[in-house]
Image (cartoon, rainbow, N blue to C red; front, side):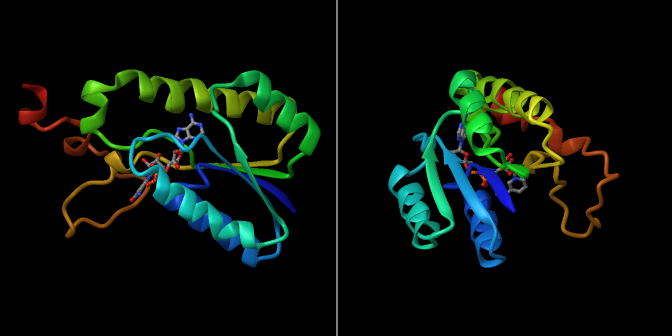
Length: 157
Ligand SMILES: NC(=O)c1ccc[n+]([C@@H]2O[C@H](COP(=O)([O-])OP(=O)(O)OC[C@H]3O[C@@H](n4cnc5c(N)ncnc54)[C@H](O)[C@@H]3O)[C@@H](O)[C@H]2O)c1
């Protein structure tokens, strides 16, 4: 199976890529290595899956629709895991464009490429911001995250 994992230098994407490689899949890890946090940490993560012969690391931004189109055409992926995203809530107050670019435009580009290339399975990550804080509450997909979707009062001032 040939699988594209976006955000492969990130916390979750890195583990997803490694899991799939251990399963003997061929993995293309895509990341733009942006400086939201340590680029060195992302490079160190990326060095791990590169030890596998079935791994290919690609530096690319999901917003680059032309390069993404060419990648899908040339590689003919079976499945896609879109884990690349601009995470965090506080950062959005000062960097709103980063969220629109990666989470809206980038995700739309992935959806579009999957549609045009007849990708049978697309897995993507929801925002961690929708997970309620209370440890006592059971976490299910049907939870309506009323409180956790609101920025804290001090973040609005
Ligand atoms: N970490 C958690 O506990 C958690 C929990 C639930 C959901 N999530 C969600 O999972 C997703 C990934 O979270 P994470 O913790 O791995 O974040 P992360 O910041 O560690 O990883 C995201 C990766 O995506 C890359 N990236 C961002 N924008 C990109 C773009 N336009 N093009 C290419 N690469 C890009 C970044 O460089 C980074 O390496 C987010 O949507 C997050 O909200 C995370």
